[in-house]
Image (cartoon, rainbow, N blue to C red):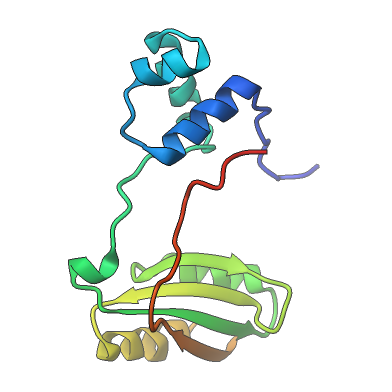
Length: 155
């Protein structure tokens, strides 16, 4: 028996609703309804089902640098043993925004968002490197963000 989450089947209308929300998460449901041929109430229900199922998350995307988080980095992490265990521990750290288990040179990639270089060093030295199984970390400091989009559409 697999414990994989069930992936909802999306019809063309739900996919179009998602694409419209990716363009503008504050777009009124009435406007979306006109675009997809549904009532405002029907769009509201569909969006609620999409958020309840975890397909969609409607949030405010911010620029961390403008909020005082001037040091961002991608961390490449190697692990002895099952990387999923370390990934769960890393995911629980507040300064970590993104965690992905990989099958390449690193077992885990994690994005850190910190206020300063000192905070980043503290994060790596006292939180990441002390996790059981973590054997190596490599830090890739962000020098400039050139693209960060969330409107890749649906398939």
